[in-house]
Image (cartoon, rainbow, N blue to C red):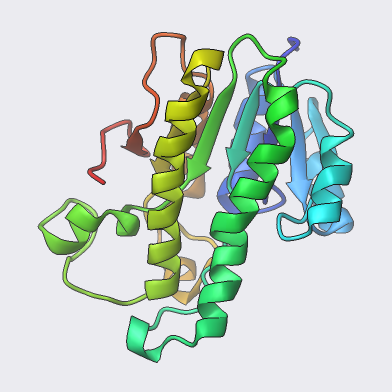
Length: 238
């Protein structure tokens, strides 16, 4: 163990759980952010040494404030919690679906990041990792790319929310640079998780994506900031 601490939101399952496990294996004390205390506690027990439960619903302002009050210092924040309630194109997506998606994927990230900034500022090497999506890349969405066939406007709510998250990643990186922060976004690739039916049917290993997040979480001081990277460390165009 060392004296570094991390918080991973949505860490009771999927990619988030693997990120928490790998960070704990690196010796960090890891707060497993979870909306459901029971599921969160089970994840903590499965991860083992170094894991701590932190009940955290990223859409609940009061709950976020209560969680932040429990953490005096934080070295790493991984904004992993995300939803994808619809795979439909924009014309077939109800406004309510956009609101629900943005509430978690955009507003939740802002709320959690801002609430935990005081704790992050206590760290000599603060790191923020925002779990985005390669499908949020406007360049890849309109040109040939290594991850998916371009030209489809499906999953409009999810993809546009992650594009907004990418913009916020740049803005946080720019405004927090003087404090030694490294703020980057991760494209984890299509993984076998319960994010949506397409992901659930995929064969991609969530643990492989988690390794990319951990790489960004433990960047050295000369590492990049304000970047968008694939799980294997290669840059992704905005």
